[in-house]
Length: 131
Length: 206
Image (cartoon, chains in turn purple, blue):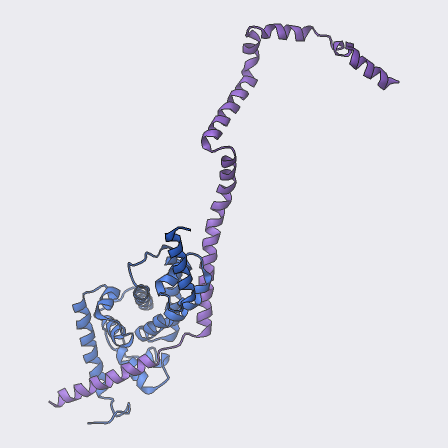
């Protein structure tokens, strides 16, 4: 009985102590508050830094592709450019073999370097310049 | 503007002007890059972790370290926070509790048997050093430090942080029945420890 009584007292005391503990929770000191807020700011800055290079590397390309009409248009442009390059490297024989082009090529090769000056207008201009 | 857009805007305006916005709403805003809510979240949440860690660790300095680390983890999780899955406070208590266990483990060289090892009754390294604002509060802390780790955690969460048993079960990852058992055993041990000090603590007999 006495033990029970003592335990009851102990529980009552304990509840009082718990209530006091709840009423006197430790306050967060200013320096800890500032440190936590600095951590928060650092974290948000890191997110911005992590996302910034993605934007920088993707942005201009995405803009260029959009300006050219999207990826299908870019594909066509690349194909046309490659074809042009290929003609530039390999085409002279092929093109000179084509009907009609041979005549043009022959005409070009027979033209005198001075023939261009033999037209009336240009000769007149050159003569005036010399005076 | 669409109806859904108007609803969203109204909700955003309400949360910005409402000081009673939920912890979760503020955390989501923080995760979306709003720096203005960090102070309010810290004001609400840091004292809870500090209170818990101080009682569980018995050391104010270690408790402050745990509080800062727990808040860092909160900031980091913010962008990935999934609404409705857990209460922010429950998540934070759980993180704080695990950090306390890590601190104990490091202090003891890598191993803590949570249920078997009572704290060494060394007031110089324990509560008396950390909490010196009154004999009664020190007495409670000294008594708490004699409990096995899990009992102390359960008692602090139940009777000082005033969480419900299901909440504590979620934080400690145990059943509600196990929480009830831990808190009951813990209280009995504390009551016995304090019964012998009634006069010293200023309580009247009878």
